[in-house]
Picture 1 (cartoon, one colour):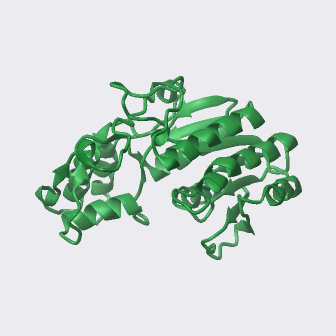
Picture 2: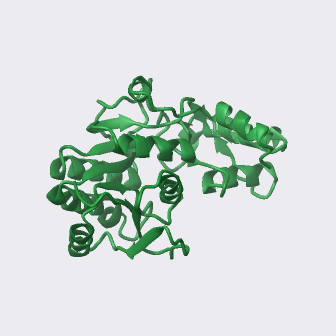
Length: 288
């Protein structure tokens, strides 16, 4: 392997920032990339700009740094250049990592599925996307598998946390406070995962020899409506201010059942808590 450094793409993102925090606590040297969002001034992290639309720049950076591990979290969720960044960019990262023999952990998503399965999706279920973002993530998976056959593809769900609060939780709490009037879907199922649990699991995974697809999601399957009510209760707000709606009645087609089967991760010893367990723990810490 390379120098011992971990390269974290998307270091200024929500998950990337958590990975940097936990890697620092473990004494892992990190180089992190950024693009549109400038990085904070952190002495323990070396920051490098990177545009995932530029395969030559990706190759040059990874070849120069010679990281032992690449954790690819960078993505774009919407246009412009959604496919070029989220889809093709992942393939360029995988090819460069494979060329230097770096271990690669690629972050994928539960929205690569159409959401029509009656049970939770397992690692063997093939992608069947129905959204542009899901299609980009599905393309990323295919390109990563082709370019770096020993890579790990981590399918995960809604990532949340409170220090700082993530945008999904902030939105639900704004609804509970009456600051927003939107409704939360009763029929859209996800397995929200606490950002610190996910970061720890990813760093542990980097030290393992696992290869292929693995689901890293929270242990509890909830609708967005149920999740919003739980958050409201945890923050001392009235959960009845959260109104429910049906995704099936929305004019925009969305995957409804995105539940991920995490039995493999549990068998391998990874600890990814459900929302109620996390909120109970945070309540004991007087989070407000």
